[in-house]
Length: 346
Ligand code: PMV
Image 1: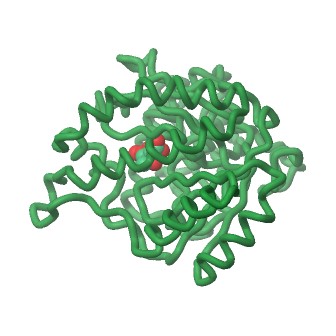
Image 2: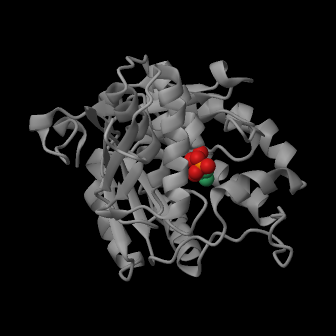
């Protein structure tokens, strides 16, 4: 019997992955840049056991649904094939944050699963190799493997598509405030969004623009230049939504375009622009759902939370994060949900 426990944070893209070059390998059409979110953690244990007749997968204390269990088994098979392991595994995974609040648990889940499974199987993988492995489970999971501020180099094949750290988590005292309005699941999964993206007349324009955006966001992070970061990151998120709103998901012929935004989303975006006009440096970004992620520098956190209380008092969930570390192994005496690095945890 061989066992290992690993943990990882989800990540928030500042430059988004939207559209795939190779759907089978999750190779993206464009590069992306993200920051790990210290305020949310997935912890996963993998035990290979010769006595098990089949792989078993538990998520948050209950057997995983069939689709999730299948994705996990396919991922375990990748690790077993590489390590020459023939035993079945028990996988026990726990998220310390609610589902459907706008943080991608599939990213932290596949980053933690990759590290736990590889370690339990006796593999010692580099950060790059682990990022490649995690990417095959869920594209954006590759960005939860390295530390802090992360860039996913899109590459053109399996070996060249991986994420690497641009700067460690203590490089810049940024805060991300994730705001969810209701626990309704998003209407169109990101996988369908990726597949539909090329049907938008604006998709090629977005890919063209992303090259400049990547350079701008990379430079702004390295220079800790919030003004340069904020408008670029907002336009980038709006560009993803412009593509989503004008793309046609093949499986939904009744859909004229993908609308991820809720009325509360739009209301908060207007409020953020107003705060900035009034001198409060804060930026928003959006993923494929109605939640809003606010970004500010650490000393302004209180002010932004006060402004948020006034603008969105009825919001359902608020998660505050600092830049977080990459996936890590949990030692037995750490406790399953022990903070990864107190300097990075809010
Ligand atoms: O990794 P996926 O398939 O869940 O795609 C992530 C898509 C976005 O969250 C919208 C953008 C990103 O880069 O994380």
